[in-house]
Length: 188
Image (cartoon, rainbow, N blue to C red; front, top):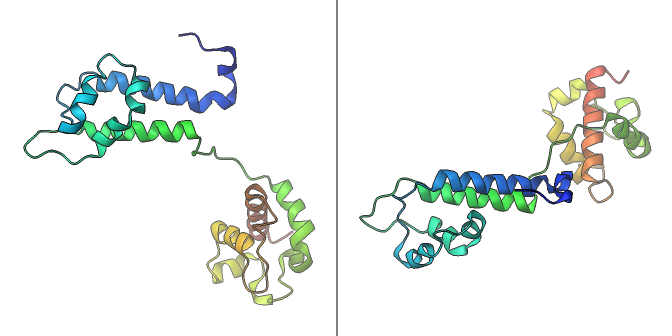
């Protein structure tokens, strides 16, 4: 199958992944003759024979069939779970809810820290509450890790204002990683 010229662009990756998942599901699920759908969905599913995997997966009755409880006395090999997993995976990959991981930008974190945080935290100190400095010892004492630093930056704590409305998620991630890396180096 030839893809259109724009299909090679990175933004099309989720769609390509979804198509591959649908194709794999079609190959894996094709010999599933033992799958028994609930009686209400059988008529709808029987019309799906010969339909493309995308048509089958997009039919809400198929997802409903996968979620429906097993009818009493009928055997199941677990194909409902497979079908449900494929449908949900396809939905997530197409909607783009899975974000790619990115490395923190420590230079950006340093710039944001110097512009916003250094007024109270110059050199990793805390000019308001001195025992809660941004130092390795204080982080150990108060059980502060990267996620807690991000939470404090975004939501504030005590006299520190919440910066979640001012900074982007990436900026908060960069600042938190910068603070943690500096605390491990002793702010040298």
